[in-house]
Image (cartoon, rainbow, N blue to C red; front, side, top):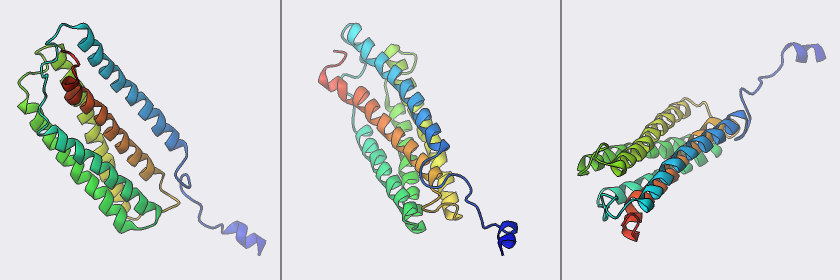
Length: 203
């Protein structure tokens, strides 16, 4: 009997079991590195706003017509992604697919609206240091959103194919953490370029 057990072992788990592992540590390091990039960009914005003469900020009263609803939509996508991850944890594939799918749709709309926001600007990347910082910062963020959408799309397909379960959800957790990071960074970018001028920064 013992020889039969040794000769025919049961199925072994593939990859880490649970929500933590080497991949989780890698995601934490990635988020830390990317956070440093945006910290440098936002520091440059506040430093130049404080050291340049009044008028450096080209938009003392930025329009919130597109940016505010877009921000709310991106925050809602984070809630949808979290809800989708909860579905995986509960082994509810329908909830997981719906949550991640909603996050993908909302994120895609955010990208489209951001492009319209760029086209509505009266300045360009070469207009001044303010214009360069605005387009570089929001452009880097948009690139991260697109990368996040690709990650969410892969997670949706893999969830649909049944690759995940409450014991095998590390890729889902990592992908959702990255999406939360992208959303949190946008809050800082939005507060800096769209809200701080109303508070007198750069004037």
